[in-house]
Amino acid sequence: MSTTETPTFAGLLAERHVLIADGATGTNYQTMGMEPGLAPEEWLFQAPDNVVELHRAFAAAGADI
Image (tube, rainbow, N blue to C red; front, side, top):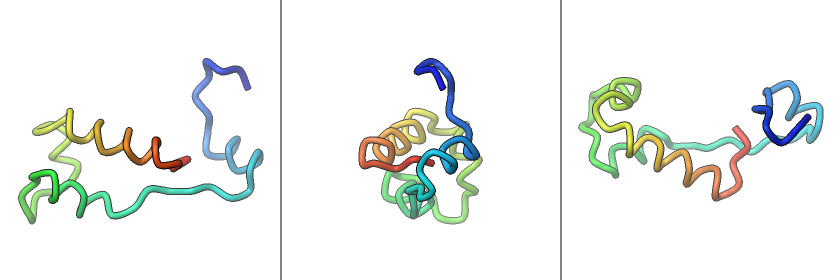
């Protein structure tokens, strides 16, 4: 796979056999200000910068997916 291609789940799994996933996304969103009861998918439209920030933090911490 070239460095410009986005890896697929199947490709990552074939490469590594163990993948590290992020966790507690909803809880983290609430810590960042999302109101309880709001669907996390809705928050993508209300606070897209926070959503990107959280997932970048997961990637920086070593999450693969």
